Image 1 (cartoon, rainbow, N blue to C red):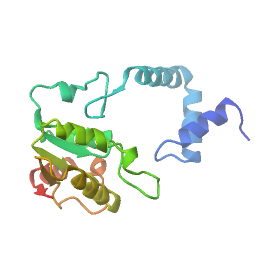
Image 2: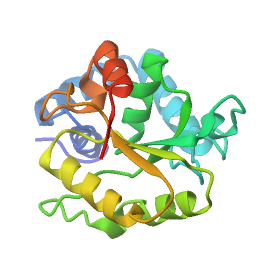
Image 3: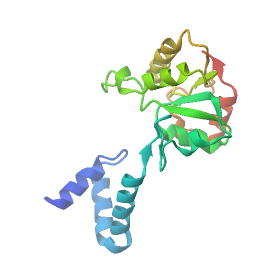
Image 4: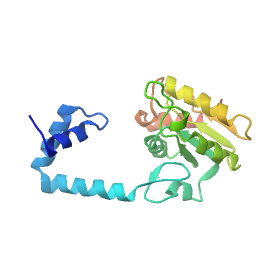
Length: 197
């Protein structure tokens, strides 16, 4: 029924997480009926973000500067690195205000079904950071899923023999839970209750 730019727009919207074709159609219609108030400002903000946001060369998070503001912050404890799967997980931990170290974003977790192997993650960058000798503790803060646990084992194997303590978040996280969906209190408690791997 639809073709051209509108069909392309709907397909692009439908490709976003949590949206299907029906939701994408509703959003497209809403934007098109409010072009001046919503669509044009949204397209400008998307372009501005695409131009301004960079990946931090140190921790792999997103920011307007490289290195990011967390890696540049002199008050941060560079000896403690929290390993997370995604940038959303950095945001989730930061919301708690309870972690004062730095991060390393893997870019996902190992997943045979999705074709994500060790080479698709930033594991070699992590090993290089630890080999530089500034880190004393590595906190593995990955999802409590089978893929998250498999990734944690690979990290522990890669860091074996290096002078660093490896800990993981406490079991207070629900099985199958993802950091971005947990409440701030649960994340803060899990950080404080972490255990050696």
